Amino acid sequence: MKKVQFNNKIIPYLFVAPQIIIILVFFIWPSAMALYYSFIMEDAFGVSSEFVWLQNYKDVIFNSDYYASLGFTLIFSTLVTFFSLSVGLLLAYKTHKIIKAKGVYRTLFMWPYALAPAIVGLMSSFFFNQSHGDLYYFLNNIGWHFEPKSDPLSAQIMLVFIASWKQISVNFIFFLSGLQGISKSVVEASLIDCKSDVKRFWTIIFPLLMPTTFFLLVTNITYSFFDTFGLIDTTTRGTPMGETKTLAYKIYQDGFLGADIGGSSAQSVVLMLFVLLITIFQFKYLEKKVHY
Image (cartoon, rainbow, N blue to C red; front, side):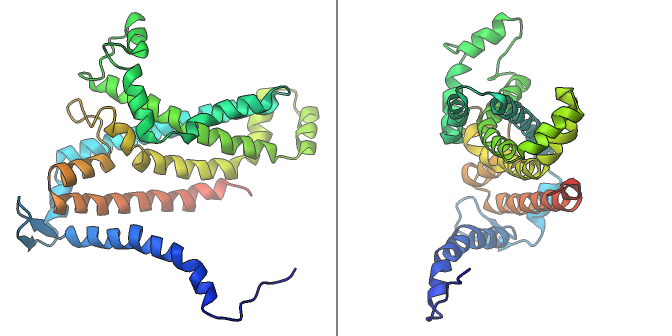
């Protein structure tokens, strides 16, 4: 194999410079500024500021509203990850077994992947609208008093449904690719060794998909923590009674709408550390069960 060599030592650095600049501008610099402002408290008009050490972090720790958002975020991310992974795996497995028109099914299931979360939220607001929403009328006609504008449980279930639907297509694509990567000889041998489709799937097929499943588990948790911001902003905006605020959306409300720069910066640092701990736990304990 022929190796590419550069006579000029500067050229390799020029190739990686755009990515380094993007990381510095959109990750390192904002993170450093958030860490700095988390120790600062400004007045209501942003004219003067005071270095308050850990006071902003104390306000976060002893704030009951923050724990309510934390609880909703954990439940929301768990349900979205579970449903989106489960349905995505089911659709991928069923599509993989289809012989005719497989490309049609694959294309139809992939379409939601092209939609931004804000667009999905805007579309869903029409379906669940109390004046002309089809899903709103359907749920109320079957006996469920569905009122997402006044009932926190209804709003939370609506968000879980919308966020899961948006992420199913991504999981479907990766699971289908993983199924297509399994050797046909392994599948044919499993047909001889195990006649039950369910048992064959859980004992042979699914363990071979563990690398894909682990990757999707990490990305789905990240999605539910951060990428659902646009979805929430175009549907509930944290209402009713603040019961649909994720930690990321609470940072936006406190920082941009409430002008609490110090408090929101402290929340963002805590959120970053929290997600970091979850990621470390996933790679340290869950990855041990993954066989590549």
